[in-house]
Image (cartoon, rainbow, N blue to C red; front, side, top):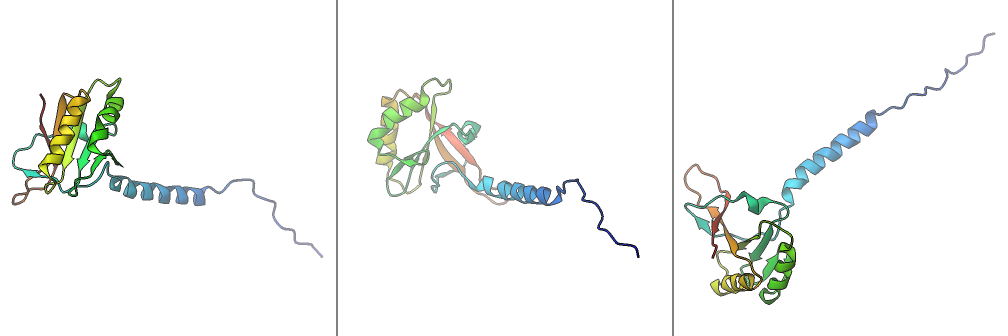
Length: 151
């Protein structure tokens, strides 16, 4: 009688499961990344003819948000307006573009926005961009824009 023996071990690595897992992770990151918005979301003022400012969308842009309840946020960190000057000054050291963007909620008190602007002036900021949204008309979509407010 003849003995049946098992075939020899295959030395090749099967990478198909690894590729499947990597593709799933890639899809997950592609879906989640746009959801990671910079800063605090506020209901910005809508204007008819805003000026588009792509510098506000950069990852290193300094954005100050003024919420409806009067709280101010430096990027994502809640910061009182009185403490903005030294923090913004530190962020702008060794930078060529010293523009700071302010996005205020349309129901925020104007007094708080002006206090933020005054504290930015104390920090030596001479270029301030006020972020607004395009007023939505028939068949048009909203886009983030800014109104320049320099000295």
